[in-house]
Amino acid sequence: MSTQRVAVWRNGATSVVGPDEPVVTAFDLGLGRGDGVFESVLVAGGTTPHLDAHLDRLRRSAGIMGLTHPGDDAVRAVVTAVTADWPAGTEGACRVFLTRGLGDGTPPTLLALLAPVPAETLRQRAAGIAVVALSLGVPADFRATAPWLLGGAKTLSYAVNMAAQRHAHAVGADDVVFASLEGRLLEGPTSTVVWAAGGRLHTPPVETGILPGTTQARLFARAEADGWPTAVSSGTVDDLHRADAVWLLSGIRGATPVTRLDGVDRGDGGLTGRVQELLAR
Ligand code: PLP
Image (cartoon, rainbow, N blue to C red; front, side):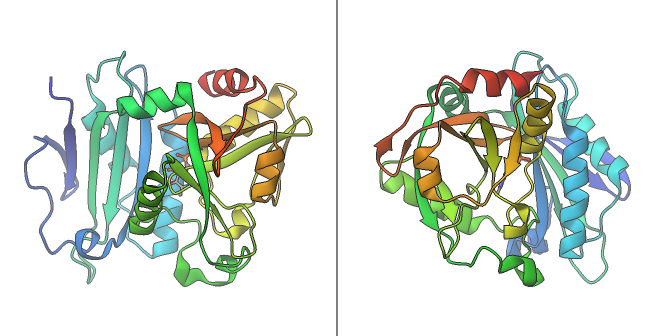
């Protein structure tokens, strides 16, 4: 069985094609301009247990971008097609792409790709990661007033996010926490920041223009139900240094503990097991 799969939606019908088959024209605006939105959906136990939250966010991102959305049923259809018969014992990363197609009122392009979760991601989930804090160069409250910056939308324009991760690798770290111009915590290039302090779990406010994380939302709902209070907090990098534990969260990586921040080793107060158990419930 191939470990890479693609499903494509065309004229209202879904088909699965080989991973090397052409699925978009070179004129697709998603390719030329990053003019589209996407979701990364975990496939675990052969299913997509958190798909609904990703469908909601894809619709929301498309709305922010003024993109035509083909409807949840179409998105479900490409995800179902691409994940069919996926082995229950292999975690998969299903990426759903929705682009503006050729523009000018033509139908959007909708694709789903599936591949195993990289071994390095699984290793980091257990072993932890070194993170550097980098400034994104915008004030924390700016994106809320600047809709053209597409705060809160999961757009295909991830070139800056990828460059930030390359920068982290160049300075010997694994990943990044972005901070605002004045030093307020934002998010990682592909993750939500969560920290434990004062008996609570904390995460930065979405009013800063960060992506509302589906994994963070699930963790906070389950933590609250389990008697672990949560808070939306406007923290700084110093707060992360002082915290009992820091994690980067995403659907694919789960909760990955930060074991080194700006070159300083840090622990997790023995809390990672509880966080990962809450997410796995
Ligand atoms: N923030 C950004 C910029 C991301 O790309 C992601 C990952 O998709 C997240 C946060 C975490 O979101 P989720 O937990 O829904 O995967």
